[in-house]
Length: 262
Image (cartoon, rainbow, N blue to C red; front, side, top):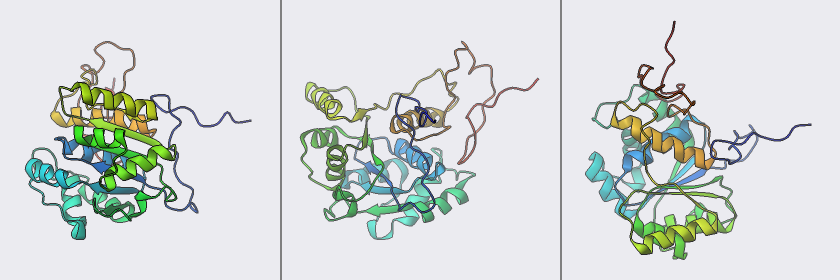
């Protein structure tokens, strides 16, 4: 008799793939106004690489941050082009080699909801979702979710996720933290959310800023129980990351660090 699915990294049951006849059950991804749009893009690519449907809510403040950090103007009524450009562009402005595959998965798996549409599907607990990731999470969104303010669709969807007992992963990026923000994060933890600060680790052998972004995104997906190969995992070998050559990981590739041969 089976013991059930093995635990995912972080101790949560893995988010298994949907059956062919299963209704669409997406991850909701909320993007708030904190700096850190590359983290959101990497998480979204990771979800698409895992074949997960995604519902996206980009807050009003996040549009300004996205424009500032990428030059991309977000439009709810015509979101496909800016979203594809965002996900298919490297930090240095060059297109990603896997841009065509990313764009294809956007077409198949993504839906977008305006942040002021309080009647959108993610606003109701009867809409079946796998859970929600808020990345990056501004201190304002952390407070609003912790207090249950539901001032926009992002906060309302997070509140619904908590009340339905689904996974909520909140990724604060701003620092240092005030006493109020620390209390709000404790309240989120007590309510069942995972607070996963955007804190990159250096043991995975990062050679570039994108490696650090992917490390955070991979750990966020770990917290959500979504399988991913966005970074080199710890194997207990001191200096192991320095001994292996770097290579670029694109959508659908294996681990970021390829083992040496010979």
